[in-house]
Image (cartoon, rainbow, N blue to C red; front, top):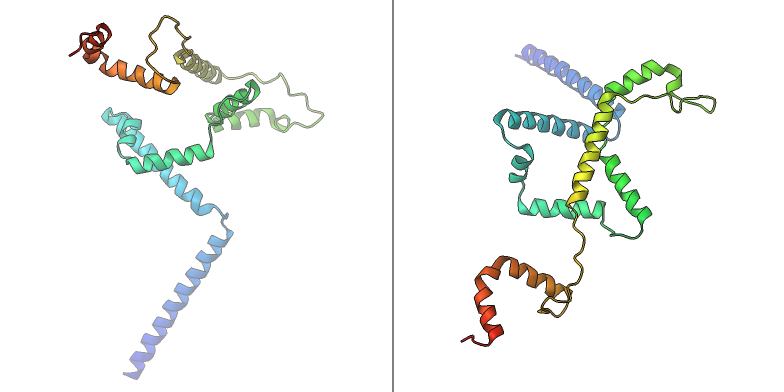
Length: 212
């Protein structure tokens, strides 16, 4: 009985040593990883899931953005909007230089680099790809057809968006004044747009003085 216990103890000690060794190896691997590895890993896993979801929606003929929005609660949407405004606050128009900078930053955030094209260009240029003060590289780059198409598509989207903007209507001297300030005027316009057809007869009677 004692001999069996010794064998069991020996086996357990070996297993413990193996587990300890494995834990030491894993701990060493974790220490050698970058400090933001866990966040990067979680981000990659999230991106893979999103890609799978996009393919699934495309296969079923469902709009991915609409399907995603349907899963977001009102509280999450408000929290996301607050976070977005805090990160990119809308300071309004101050001058044209600031507006141009904001436009540039917005457009550059949308750029998704083509890594395959980047690697091809790097292999093609060799040492010239990393210019120094003695390198004459400016003007030698010829954009690809796909790059030009992307630029044209983006410009067309900008033009389409710009056309949707509406100028502020000029003040009409002949219009009836039924407001006390600009905020009240906006409210009255909204009320007229939604309920005007129901209150037109009442309004006419009040103007004629024949309302009961």
